[in-house]
Length: 181
Image 1 (cartoon, rainbow, N blue to C red):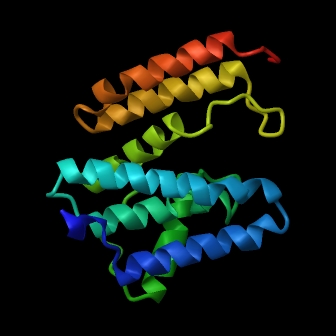
Image 2: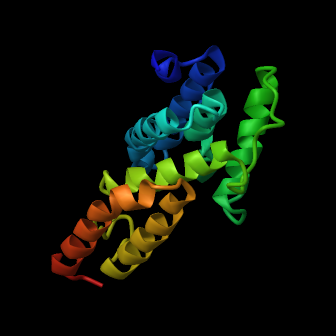
């Protein structure tokens, strides 16, 4: 199993591109500073899910992990961030001479489903639902995001059942959280 956690040269390139992009954008928009921690958490979940899915291409999954939110940092904000992320990923990977034929926005492949589920799971073990006036996150929007994430972790069979205690804990916490909606 050790080889599943080892990075490849193209994944390292992806990691550096993303971290450099965050640093560049952070100068103008300091709130993007949470992205490195978030993506590291997504990576931890992806690696955990990959242990149950040895048939998945771990390099494609890890590329998806490192580029999945890049569209929040670049491109036309009127276009969905997933589409912008895919465009950015294709550009960077083509510059690195890496085939982009396995990439897709919609979670149609096992690898794309792993990235989507890992992203949603990472929210449950991070602070994504904590209401914040700075992020314009209310109890209502947090509960909506929690429910969407709970739905999306079902993309990987068995993951929703494993994370139901976290889902329920967040629902309880949010029901007790001081309201400022």
